[in-house]
Length: 391
Image (tube, rainbow, N blue to C red; front, side, top):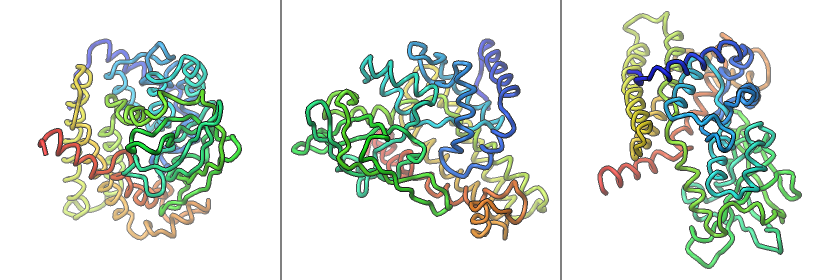
């Protein structure tokens, strides 16, 4: 079931489709289609953001006051859905969707004027410094320290699983600025230029063979106190706001329907009674239910209601279906899913089998983490248990 759209929203949808038909180049679609990582292809995303920026559409969830189009939740949903259908790359969310809302709410006027235009234009490419060794799910136990020294903080420590740090020229970080209080009370939110002496990035290669995440080290890194966002020692509230922002407008079900359509093409020559076809049909039914859930959720958001635990339900079900679909795709290409074929892909050598299937193995391996990143499945279940079941 599709969302009920007004006449003005239908006109807007045609405007989006016209842009996609004329501006979304085949080479960008190809890069996006072959991506195997959670954030997508960096080059494709940068090319697409440049196109959208010229039109004033790069910050799709930004208010007009800060340079965005000021779209409604339904407009964002329409835009994201059409982009998925046309094969457009996802914009990198780290600056546009995660940091920007924090600067809207907590940033000083000087921070807003300096950082926001550079996020829109992609002059500043951001990564997120939250997780540390031993401080992932228990983020409040983080140990990276920032000690005030005049008009600077001196930062020492390390961040782990830092996505796209190899591309980033800036990082937003949670750091400990006070130790003799409960863990959440002594944390601050800092903006750090990656070119600052003492910042080192070491790559981490995933099981899929991709370089998506990194470890970042800070060795006596001097950060101006002007780069503090929000009050000192109250960064935990800033961090929570970042994670809670942007609930409406996503099109997860649409993206999965595109993946399902690709899977059906892989299975089309199998007999109707084949086990893989039956499992795909069952998954397709579950996907229809997810689509209805997403439509209902979007209607609530558009009406100004808080979706509450529905967001957690969506996250659990969507990540599970992503893993099922990628697993079925692996089975569909049979021997061509061998890890050796993925090694050939990473080395830039010709792969065995169809070129269109070359990323399936890596995508399957990468999807194993989809039930962890963005809020682990267990964390989402705890949210549901508290808010729905009252446990």
